[in-house]
Image (cartoon, rainbow, N blue to C red; front, side, top):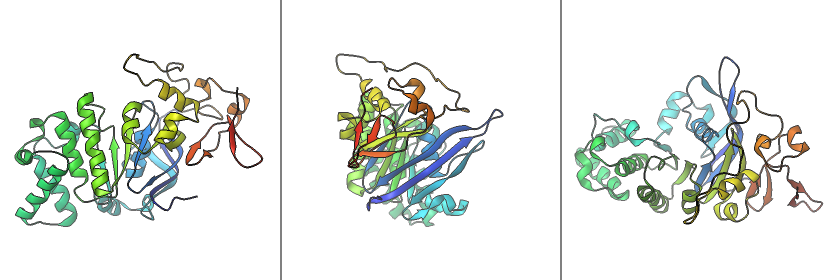
Length: 333
């Protein structure tokens, strides 16, 4: 049943990349939603399709990639049906992005304030100079940046300051949803925490929703409200962050959580190393079965559907069986 607070609904999204040997199914039938005022974490190993899935949401997939099918409903409109001009108006105003590499996304020849002003005036037209300056300074205050950076260039800022400048730019037009694509991955752990706290502050003050892409389960545990786990282009589990860490329903989720290091122990993933199948020719049935410690015959035959095994906890795994009373129980293997 659709949650009444849903602002984004992604339904059966498929994004493929063409190669001479066949399509790579980088996002293969992914469905999830984002609710008002929440941070949804999207996690998985590198190459699991996290950025491709959100690239489909943002409509930023470029050749040889293509959106094959699906629906992306933002604020009641299927934006996959929008033309280029409609998407141009939508970006920044309703749907914004905090990129992974701030230094590569910011224009080195323009001051930080000029780049934010460009976003505002592109969408809203020419602004009064004094009012625009005050508006930009207020954005800086919101993300914890000093007013002195107004006339500074990207190379004059630290990595954390550049990333917070990108956050300031993302909220310039009061969007309802922001995609943070590995926004903390290039930063040291202290600065990561500052940037993550900035996003939490923005969420509270503006009631804006986030999709936070990453692979750091420890950081996700401290920041997100719900967690969605991807593997090889498919969504395997989605649940509230506390439920996920206390009672993960999918074996892959268990493995990711088990790999989180502690103060006394560094851990490696309890999983066969490397990619075990050609991404142009995925295995039949469950996409994870070749690396799963609990794989059984049914896993090779059919792709498991996404089912709600506990309240607001959905998983795609044949280990879970429906009982006569309609509830689900996990089998022992």
